[in-house]
Image (cartoon, rainbow, N blue to C red):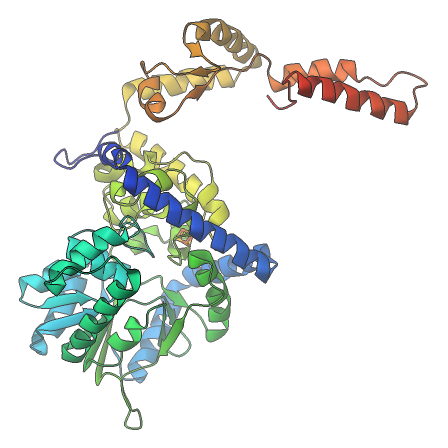
Length: 505
Ligand code: SF4
């Protein structure tokens, strides 16, 4: 793996660090397992999950194919509702717009609900530079802000921390030792944040979905902090990626069915807020002034690209992270950007535009396709990872040895005789390295692989060889009744099974 910026650790180096951290691995595995189980149960209870997935995919495909139309419709309707709509082509533009709003209002503090776009823009750090304190109001985000870290999961930013570590962080804020009881810790943060909500000059939110037909924004959350952020401060700024659009409220029904189930296994998120403009005369609360910053920052580069356009269909549920065997081992920080897991491995290079700098991240995948199976809008992330690897090679960032190995592999796999010969030679050669049924040697290309696992040895028989033998053993004799043939087949299979010879190779 290589990276153009040699000062930054590569994914491989960061992954090695993560693999040494037993607690992180256990914590990530425990939570992702729980989320996967929740998703499975919730989707089974709903029924027709595949049909819902397909409906979700069709809505996203249609919207992104007509993104310019729906974005303009959304912006026109939002303006008619009294919202100031800003388009930001780059991260710099988005930051400049947000900072100028903060300066115009002489803001000192900003309270924020969870927003991955603001992570992408490093907005908290930029606000700090002009003397504005940004306070994260989502519990997980608040914890990692105190720890000075990036989120390690799209929906559970502090997935890698346990309650004892959290108690330590919060005790510093409290100025006294807090018990590691989760109720006490949550109660402390709730009280602390109430003061911040009341004091803040600006409330800043992300946006799960923007409804084009009415110019409304919809926020999904479980803690109620987004409601506080969008209700109490006098000014509200919402930052949204330009792909967050859906055409109508009817489409939201499908998204509201898919997103919480895929993210946390919930039938419905605890709070779902629809916001259509600032406070009106008859309203009891809400901001007096509202801004929406629609961020491009590399997203439009994916439009019209047959290999990557579907990336814009993502609804940021995090299901692909929970399903990914690589993420479940190394957690989110190893990916090096705010977006981690399979979606991060594709989105980060795509948004950075600089394939060279991020070329090694696409290698952090086994290409098993579990991300695709988990994705509620059926984004073929595993295929995109292959395209990224191809781009890396085409851009001259591949390794010569890897290229030669792949050519050799292609030559063997493309010819049946060569394949059979290679298997025979492999079976002879592996005798030197096979111990207790597996290859454990940490040499050559096996060094990295065998550090944390055992490579399987080449089977004594291939599937085809076994099939041929079995076919002869169970051949139906002329005049043999089907019952007797069936009984003989059962007997052959039982004998093979007792000898440990399963049919699959
Ligand atoms: S790629 Fe699919 S599974 Fe992953 S976060 Fe996006 S919508 Fe969810």
